[in-house]
Amino acid sequence: MAQPRSLQASCPFRQGPHWLRLGLAPSLLHVELEAASTGERWRGDFDAAAIEELTLRTGNFKHFGIFCSMLEAALLQVLHLQALSFSPPCGAPPPPPPRPFRALRELRLGGRGPDAGSGVTDWLLRRLLRAAPRLRTLDLSGCARITPGALLELPAELELLWLGLPGGAEQLPRLSRGSAALTHRWRRSLRDLDLSARSFEEQDLAQAMAALGPDAPLRALNLASTKVSARGLSVLLRSCPALSFLELSGCRRLPRGTKRAHRGRREVRRCLRVMAGLAPDEEAANEGAANEGAANEEATNEGASNEEIPNEKPPNEKPPNEGAPNEKPPSEGAPNEETPNEKPPNEENTNMELDQ
Image (cartoon, rainbow, N blue to C red; front, side):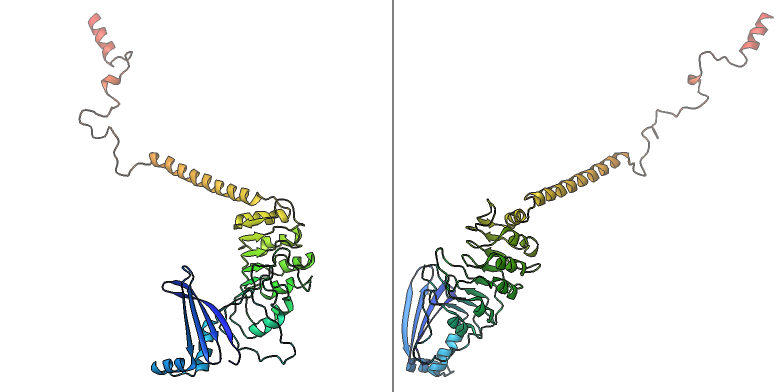
């Protein structure tokens, strides 16, 4: 702790999120707490004697330097250093590297202003992240001087990488290659990638899209104002099934109607089908036909089951005429069923006897 340092972290308390800012000096600790929702602030300065007395009363005595180092390590899971300028020391030997941020999970060095991140260089990035294996979020928006070579040296498995430049920002040095190496390096972990306004060439961006590989977890991709082509984007139709946001505003080499932000998986896949030269609504039509066929088959099966029910008779059901008290079953010799032209068998003999 030879030189003063400033830290800022977002801390969730019971009353809501708060910003905690620390000023670490060789013999003074400055603490500032701000409520993110209301803007209320609390400030306090503690010298080395006060900190050591406080730790002694708690029964776990710590020297001031050790206490500040422990506090720094506990808070540096998230580090925000936007709108700050850094440069290597001139005319003096470089200072020793800072303590490794082994617990750091999120680092934001960029910003939205035209000069945001202008002082962030590869030298600073290497010093901060030389030993940060748990880093998952890296925001370098507006940091035009960061090169892919420095990023590839990071030991972390990044999930969010923002390298976009604001409109009109000039990238120095101008880089034409390197995006393919970045996507290949984090193809299995990257979920959000921003390369907007970067000067990568068309072929390099096409290789970057192809390097993502099958079943990539990428969900958001910002390629606004880049040289990406329709052929390069078409490979995402199969390699990125989870892609739900695609920003293509200002991409001059793309077909009309696609140079905008596409939100939702269905809209993104429809755009990618256009890039691949396929019918945009073919998937929706096939899906609708499949659903309609399934509905018709279900209706047919239901109708067939309904037709079989009336023809079935319970096994113990009796015929309607069986067992009726006033009705008798017809017999073969019943007189009512004799034809009128039939005569009794002895009628002819009776007539002969009368004649005699």
